Amino acid sequence: MIADTPGARIEGTSAYSVSEQRWLEQAAKEEADRDGGSKSAILADYQRRLDAGEPLQYVLGSWQFRWLELRVDSRALIPRPETELIVDLIMAALGDVRSGKVLELGTGSGAIAASIAFECPDLVLVATDSSADALALAEMNLVSCGVDDRVTLRLGDWWEAVDTDERFRLICSNPPYIAEAEWLGLDAVVRDWEPQGALLAGRTGLECYQVIFGQAHRYLEEGRGVVVVEIGATQGGDVQQIAMAAGFDDVSLSQDLVGRDRFVVARG
Ligand SMILES: C[S@@+](CC[C@H](N)C(=O)[O-])C[C@H]1O[C@@H](n2cnc3c(N)ncnc32)[C@H](O)[C@@H]1O
Image 1: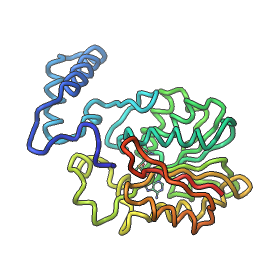
Image 2: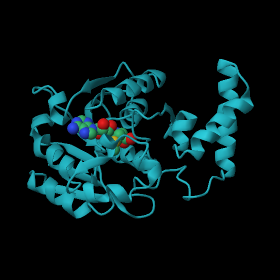
Image 3: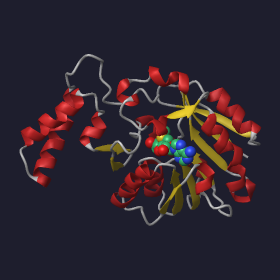
């Protein structure tokens, strides 16, 4: 769940866990070694930012996602640990033939696209986002991960960023899925610091799935293929329905590590 971000703290407390303290000290040392300045002053600044409620990952400036160390900052959503699982589902859906072209809609920091490219060296990808800021961050990550030659970034609103004659073996997305009524209930560390456009979908929370599944067939090779999406934990049935209504005849749910329905894999 979006609210389960590492670094979220119990409201009203400012104590750091041992791991947080270790990460902060390591990052402060690296920054002092790299840019000069006093490690203790840098650490004090990090702690001030954490105490003000900023997510740990933004303070550290980088975060691990699968095999990659990604730069993270307020331009894009912090890649969540459960999102690592969508990469496994994508690779399983591709089977033994891990070549061809894959599309990711809403790439944010580029975590999913960079991981697929890194772990499948014969694949090429197109990764889109409606946020130019997020794409600038994704570009930095693609370069630092050495996969920028196989991932093309595009700016635009969902399918508008894709050429009408492009076709893909597989389409994936972790789109915004928070409903308007849920917004105020999100953890403050998420709601007040991460980009609203990466989280909030609309009145029902299902709006992005309707757009994505609504046109996916048009962009799949020979009009058939696989779409893999991350979903909110209560959205499984609704997103299954949306995929089936869009003509996918084999639609299954997959779970995260604690057994919640968090992914839809649609074929057909
Ligand atoms: C939940 S975030 C996922 C980011 C990243 N893929 C991840 O898993 O960490 C959703 C992403 O979709 C993008 N997005 C929101 N509305 C969009 C739209 N209309 N067209 C394209 N991308 C959009 C946001 O900017 C954000 O980067």
